[in-house]
Every structure is written in C-alpha cells, then in structure tokens.
Image (cartoon, rainbow, N blue to C red; front, side, top):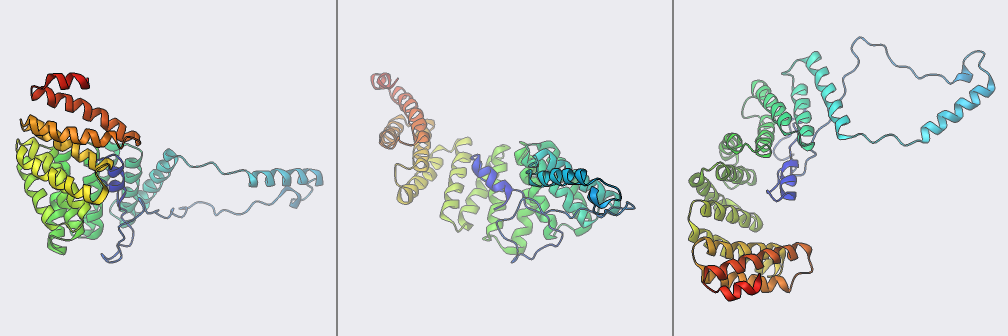
Length: 345
C-alpha cells in the first residue's frame, strides 16, 4: 500500500501513499504493494574537499598531561552514552533539500538520481502537509522523468501517480483527473481492465470526476470499476462512491439501490451493529429523505436508531446515534408525524 492510500484511508477519503521512484526500476513482478514512502539517495562524496581522518585523544599528543587526558576520556565516554537527537521532519526535509541541490550541481536535473531525489523530497513535503511545495516538486520530477525515461517507463508512472495523489490532497481534483486518465490508459493497455492497478486508477478517476462536478463521467467509471474489481470490500467502496455521484445528479432511486446492496453485504459480513454497517444504514435513510420518500426514511432510520442504541458502547457509534436521532426526527416531521418528532428533540 502506498503512502497516499494509507493516509486517505486514515482520513476517510480512501488511501494511496506516495510511491518511491527507485534508482533501479523494478519489474512489475518485483514491485511490492507495501513500499516505503521514500528511497534514500546516497549522499554524494565530497567534491574537492579534504578527506576526514579520526582525531587522536589528547594523551596521544606529545606533552599532554595525564590528568587532562583522563578527564577528556571521561567526557568522551559520557558523550558516547548520550542519546543522539531524534531528527525532526524539518531536519529530514532539509537533508533531502541538500541532497537534491548537490545532485543538481554534480549531475544535472535530468539524471536518474536527481529525479529520484526530487521525488523523495516531494514525498517528505507531502508527509509534512506542505501540499503546494509537494505538487511543485512532483511536477518538476514528472517533467524530468518524461524527458529522460519516456511516458511509459515504470518510474515515470510512479511519479505521475504521486502527482495525481498530491493534486487530490491539495484540493485540485480536475488536475488530478488528467493524471489518472493517462495512468488508466497506460494500465489498460499493459495489464488489462481487471488488473488491480487499473481498477485503482479507474476508481480514483471516478472520484476526481465526481469532486469536480463531472457526474455523468464519474458514474460511467464507477459502474465499469464495479464490473472489473475482484475484492468484495473494494466493490462496496465503489458502490458507495457511485451512490454519491447518483445522488448529486438527482438519481436518488439509483443511489438507494446501491446503498441497499452495500447494507445487505455488510450485515452479512460484519453484523448489523458494526459501525461501518450502521454508517451505510444511516446513509440509506438519508437517501430516502432526499428522494422525497419520508415514510420509508422513517422506517429505515428508526431501525438504524434502535440498532445503534443497542450497540452504543463504541464512542463512534454513540456519536452516530445522536445523528440518527436528529435525522429520524426530521423524517418524522417530513412525514407529518410531529408529535413523534418532538419526542426525539
């Protein structure tokens, strides 16, 4: 799993972490899904500088007093035992900046090691939340990678995916969709539509289309990804995204159909009191409200509310229970059942 995938999952946006552009491009079979965020670039050897030599202790110098030598040994031993300071994110970024500057000076901007160093610096910026700086460095790295390796090289693909995720993180879904379109075309050509990486690119493209208001295109890609995906959990994620796009375009009945399928699957796999199941149950009730079907909204939300009351040991479930109570009261009011609504408020 890349850095961005993990990050987005943690924040509820769905997760790819940034992938590393290694100095030796691995084959497809060698690439692991779980990769570190960055690959260290070896620090360059000093250019024209003096070689370093170990310093001798004072008593080894001619004429040094024995007492001074003993005291120095004590201080050196104490210093050796002292814990080294833990590098901060800023210190690591500064180190990567120095490495990049050195490589640019020695090798130029279009050397593979320089491109790798720029990708790694952009990765660190992204981890620190410096979104614009990350985007800027990824854009430069991608332009250099295309020039050196070409559009179809695995390292170019890695940097392009990193840039797409960085655009998403910076709130630029339209720009991200342009990168996902290219990734999708290339992955379909190389690996076929059902490959995991192809489905991932199609799903991210659908998400970016939805967020940038291209709802019809989003629906098309969600539906195709649902056909191609192998994982049950990923199919549920896709159905939830599809239902959101359908709701945004006013297709409430279609959205309800998708939510009902996800709810049935999660009840079987997780149980009706699981937070993830209750979250979908809540969304289904709200979808009925949006569709102007208040009686069905009352029935669904009341059922979800009762289940949540019996499963409220989890703090997240307790918070969801409060939202269910509020939305159930709203559904009662919409259905003209004001006395029951008032009892909940």
